[in-house]
Length: 137
Image 1 (cartoon, helix red, strand yellow):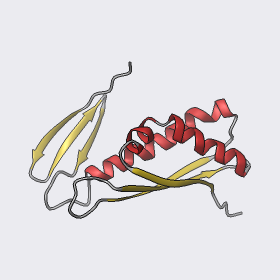
Image 2 (cartoon, helix red, strand yellow; image 1 turned 90 degrees about the horizontal axis):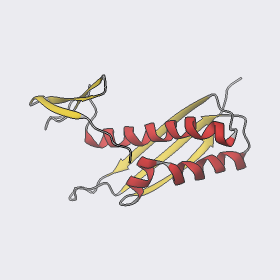
Image 3 (cartoon, one colour; image 1 turned 45 degrees about the vertical axis):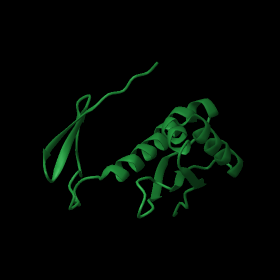
């Protein structure tokens, strides 16, 4: 069993500090919100983005999938009167010369093997795509 841990501490009414390993991250726990820190939903989306990127890094050698870069775009919808995320939409854009079929294979593997993806999809609709970047010459 793999285990993960972190610590979060309220600094004041404007925010909190998360520490894990030797990393620190200020988070938005203010009722007013703050533009210089991620709020809880944005942290959730950041986790999914990291899961997609790390998944590609991990799967690329196994699938012999060549790529040069990755960008991830995510959006979440929360019903106004419910404390839950109803849907997350994503687009993973890979800078690659791989075929559409190989990109679809990568997408399937990201869905099947993504820890955060599988955790979120158990209770939230995840809708998205993995596409090739339009490279300007």
